[in-house]
Length: 191
Image (cartoon, rainbow, N blue to C red; front, side, top):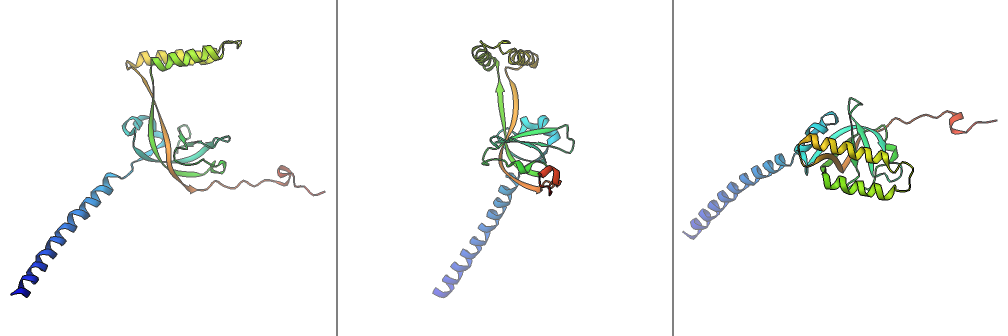
């Protein structure tokens, strides 16, 4: 009788253990699906960026430029080279100059910078203060500010949004072609 009770207990315990595994497996599959990172084309970024603020996206393109001084920024272009996106280094230490011309796939966090009248007022005061001794008094910057004020008024919102990307990680899909230098270009001529 004791053996039968132990056997029944083990059988019931085994059944409950098996039933508990299935929901966990489903939960893991659901978690994976909910953390899937959407892929956005460079050409579509400006039109959909507002929908992804604070979220990670994947974006791919050809590196058109990397900041040569700090390496903290790179610009990628899409299939249509008229469309580009600037990516800040974010969690990445820096972008190497050798990336220029490479095809990359980037995981990045979408950010939003809001520009309102207070921001424009502070910017204007800074320009007036810092360019007081300049011949043009910072006229170019003041024109930009005035254009933003017009755009803000026409938007019928309290702010203008500017979207960016902070890199979380990237991978080189296709490395940039190695440029061949001639002997004259490299200065290695034999005499």
